[in-house]
Image (cartoon, rainbow, N blue to C red):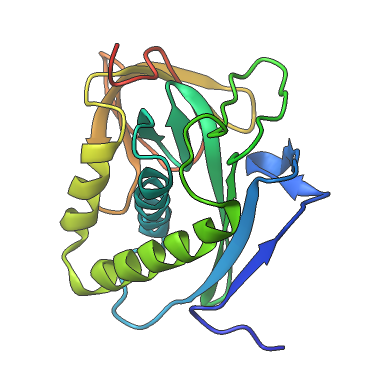
Amino acid sequence: MHAVEGDWLVAKRQDAGRGRQGRDWEGLDGNFFGSTLVQLKDGDPPAATLSLVAGLALIDAVELAAPQADLMLKWPNDLLLGGAKLAGILLERSGGKVVAGFGVNLAAAPEIEGREIASLKDDVVIAPEAFAPLLAGAFSRLLSAWRSSEPSAIIMAWMQRGHPVGTDLSVHDGDGVVKQGRFAGLTEDGALRLDTGETMLEIRAGDVTLATASRGE
């Protein structure tokens, strides 16, 4: 079967989940594992901003599934519930195609050493099988908006749902280097702006740890 934009592949169980930087991600029964394809077109905004689109689609879908949940996006590709990781997104590009993969702890939270992980088991108000259509619809709507709007519109939308400007954070790159500072917004191509107090850095890859992970704190 030849996949085209708009197709989704949803698994009932995931045995070899993979996160950023090749990390394992445990798949537990009742959780959501799905991927979709984006075919890049001439005139599209920067491909890197697709991670923002995916995050906005994810938080919109989860809010419909669990209206009372305390949710916040964390750059570049996590969704937090009460400050703990609830869901993750992995985008991989090959030529003119990008595969966006989503993992959401609808029913259970895997144990990961050194990290707080959450699930929606006490908050979700829909059947697990109803989540895929919610996410597919949100992603399709936001992908259309991404293509028809100025890049700043997606940036502003993400900023309204992500950790606030001024949040203390650390960025860990794949080589073990840690940069610390305060969140100073996003660039038009989706990079994180980090104010170290001495200089303003633009970070395009890395794992972020928030000093304050909840908007309520």
